[in-house]
Length: 92
Image: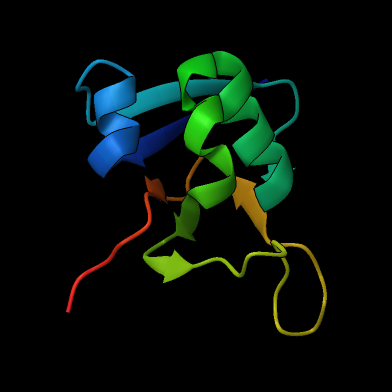
């Protein structure tokens, strides 16, 4: 079992009560980006309403919307990675 930490920003932070970091339990030592996002929403169902708009970053790198690297392989997350959920950003 692995315990992942996930930083939250903007509306994602507000929806979980203003905390800036949440803990996500996973039954395996790694998770794909899609699996990770699913685990976060399962653990914090209040994020469901913005889940399709969230952007995931891993080690300060944006993860493509399909959750894959440039070669088509899935982005794999471990408990050593810095993971963050970013809400949509707008402005000029």
